[in-house]
Length: 158
Image (cartoon, rainbow, N blue to C red):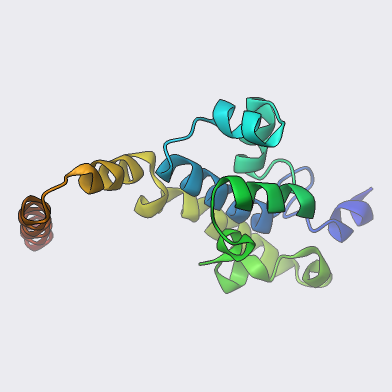
């Protein structure tokens, strides 16, 4: 039984592969940036929202034809789903897993840290979407400058 899971590239028995977690996070990122619900995305590609949830968590792997469908619906190239992948995560692809258990543990931890990345948070995505809804470039620039100043002031306090 353990051999099968090692061949499948699992980080731990029954756990998702860090590559699948990364790809799922990129699906969620793009879906959220577009303002699509999991239900709407599922409808667009012929799936239930539960299946979309499983893809986004990395619990289920996304096959190549489904990834192609997702790229078309989300209006990104297929490569988008693999961008910004840390080396320690990419080293956990099923072909590279054999004999590399230490790297797998490190990648599983790093993929858990990916979830803590502020750029992957829903709050950040909503903020960016709201920011770009501001039509006046001068107002956007002032808001940007103010936000940077507040961030810099907070960093100095730490």
